[in-house]
Image (cartoon, rainbow, N blue to C red):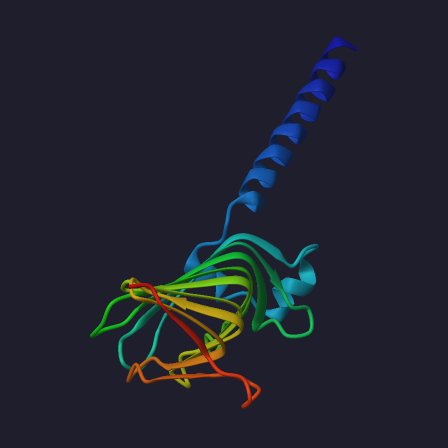
Length: 191
């Protein structure tokens, strides 16, 4: 009787230990290479579509590097190429230029074409400049960044308020405009 009790207790503790090990291994974030390999079959076999500490790295045809990190990612059940992100940080390392840093509260990332929509409290840092807004549509394929909704561009000389800023990443050509043609872009000189 005593041996039987010892075996039962040992099996119980073995079960607890295996459960703990399984929990710890599932809780670890996926490495960058593994995240992009998630397919629909794997999603259907899992109980959750949420990934903690998401990281992606990609390159465009010109050798520019695009890094994106988020505290949490939720894979879209209807389209496994789309991941909804929370607490997003991105860095664009341009081959022949300085880096662009982007932060936002939320994002929508396409793992096939790397297009990303950043939303809510978007901040963009480039050289000595900062652009804030509520929405940013970033596309490597189109080589563009379109920042909109309550856009404020700040550098050491000016503060500019507008509805939209469009930037061509390759050429650095920038368009600044208002939705309503009757309204004007507000520029304040700090000197």
